[in-house]
Length: 111
Length: 111
Image 1 (tube, rainbow over the protein chains, first blue to last red):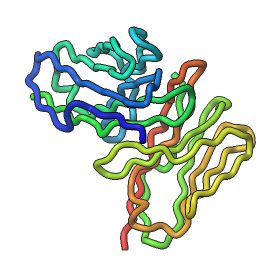
Image 2 (cartoon, each protein chain N blue to C red):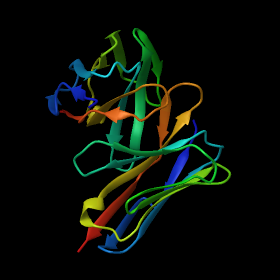
Image 3 (cartoon, one colour):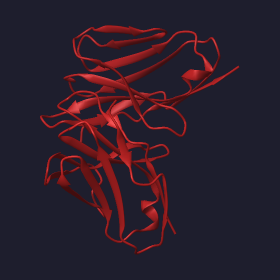
């Protein structure tokens, strides 16, 4: 079974803190993605990566950066967390144009 | 960016009633995928449609891809409480392995 794991299910941070969200997949997928999900707004793509050290901006990259040093790991970084970044963050991976596998999500609250 | 519209946003049905959600695009889709997200869960892949006019069934779920490949639908016959959740369509965007998700339809089923 494909497994996509995320480092935390729940996270509470303060405004201005640097936040790292980690995602690991165990199926050798070349593509990895970070989304945020907010009520009424669906799934919005923040960044994605199609190979190690490669990244592309999604629809809402402002305030975020990413890192992919190893194929299995894709990190989302909030350089200076703000309250409007309170959200559910979902990581996903896939190979080619096949089905996409999601992690369980991290619910981040920024106070 | 490309828009994939889904309607309705929300539907509440009595158990045993049918349910349909529609996905519409302004451009021709290369293929379309459907995902289900249970409350508190993460999106899980249901199916992929590729061919014009394609119809696929999974038990009580029927998926259709329009002849012009600009729309798709998911129909559930005789809903059950286990069908509760949000249903998303998603299409591959451009040449990258990036999915564009529809806005989702939230289904509530009551006894």
